[in-house]
Length: 467
Image (cartoon, rainbow, N blue to C red; front, side):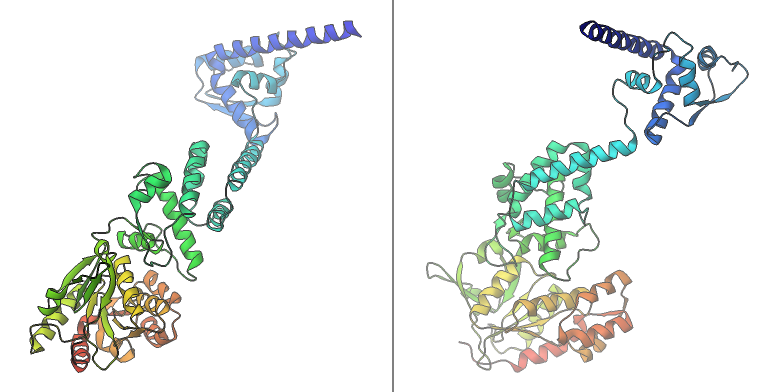
């Protein structure tokens, strides 16, 4: 038995040496280079030795190499079709007769050649194990939700999968950072708490630019926020996939992150504030009827807001989103006033989509039981803004000149494209359904510039004593 094992080991060793000799021989013959690459591709495709390959534009070296092993004349041929099983049989007539073609291809390639089906299966197993290990690193609902979305190849996950293909360990670091970020977001819904994005990124990743939106890690982080926001805010979707600067800021601010708390501001007239140390601010601006741009950074210093004008006994403010409309209202109302101050309910301009500064200010006003009268454009984005305001402040927000008559008066010649009209599917507020259906029917936008006279009349009616 011992002698049999010795003979078996010797045979195995001899075969290995012969295999390496064969691989070295065929690698050294340039006439076999293209043929062996085609053989490898064919095996990967079929998962077995079989089928045939075709070599076009034969070189003299390839004709000589094929003639030598296949025992055929290829001197007049411009191309050749070679069957793998026939080549395998031809090997048996050489000094490498004990070598199987599959073993030869493995030795030639320097690795065990797998079929594409086997490669994909092994890839899937490794990838599943990679993400399963990541799953064990977190039990937080947001992180698990985002990871499940990646595993199901859901929206916004393509960059994560591409990153896995390029460098899995680097993706692991990114995802662990992103999990940490998702689990420590400052706030939700645009409430009072907020953090500057670079400072937050430095705490999470050790790099203040670690979550910048032009980095791969930052892009995956933003995709995670988009996905979570769509899950947490039913009906919300981000189209197109690449966000505008305004959309990006709004998304970050929803979770309490700001890229810049100086440029994140709200414009007001007719308001006064009180600092935490008891000092009054904006008094001169109010008395002179001056407009103020108030950045988020300064709003956070306030302990309270004073609405100096009570009107009919109920505190109220007007909110518009268009700066041009705001300026026109201010100019006309000042012309109508018999005082240098601002004898009207306060007026606020959001400058487009609600920013964190706006939410911060409105939150403080609502704490004073202030009514908020909002006027915006008659387009899908305007209706969604109005809906969001009322959903946030259901007991305090009111729509101002936002009915079907106002829509017809404001109607423009601007036709709304289908991708914008589709956004109206997310308008579910009962107060906006009539206008929504009219908009779907006419496919035209309406703009609040044509309603300035109506807004002026409303505000003039509400003049009263200053508190």
